[in-house]
Image (cartoon, rainbow over all chains, first blue to last red; front, side, top):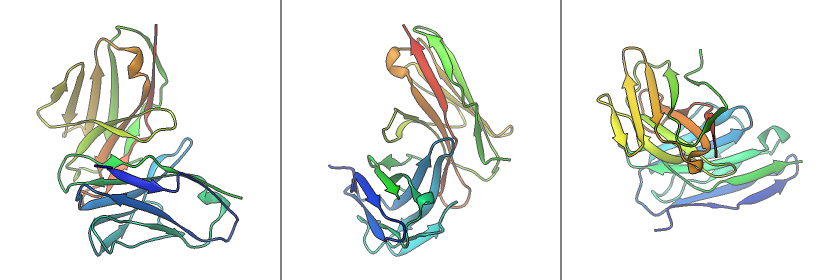
Length: 112
Length: 111
C-alpha cells in the first residue's frame, strides 16, 4: 500500500495563478481532509469529505475548492493564488471510526 | 476560547525523565480524541487514540477527562527519539471527519 500520496511535493506559483494539489489514497478510506500548516498557527482544516460526493468546509475554506468524485481521490484547487496561501498543505484519510487520520507527506507551496 | 489548547513548550528534559503534556478542548460534543507526533518538516503521525478508560502503549499513557474536557499524555523514560512536537487532536463535534488540531507542544530530550 502506498498510503496517502500527495503531488507535487513542492510548488511555486505566481499571484493569480490557479492550480490543483492532488491527493490519492489506496486504503479505501471514506474520510479525507485537507489541512494547511503555518508557523505558529498549527494545522487548520480547509475542507473535508466523509465519502464520495460529500464535502464540507473546515475552518479556512476561502480561496479553495474541493470535489470527491471517487473514494480514492480528493484534489484541492486554488482558484487564484495569493501570497497568504503560502503554506504546507497536508492531505489525510481515515476510516469512519476512532482510528485517526493517516497523512500524506505534504505539499510545500510558495506564492510569489 | 480556542477549540483545542496546548502548552506550546518547549519542554526540555533529560533522557530517562517522565514528561506530561496537557490539552483542553472546548466542544463538549467531541467524541474522538488523539495524540499525534510531528517531526520537523514531516507529516503528523498518529501516536495513539485516547479513550475514557485511559490507555497505555509502552512508555506512553493517555488519559481523558470528559467532565473537565481535558486530555493528557504521559511519556515515561524519555528517549532522544521522543524529541518531536506532540499534537492534541479532537473531533469538532458532529462529523467524525472534522478533526481539530492543537498547535502542539514541542519536546526536546537531551542526552
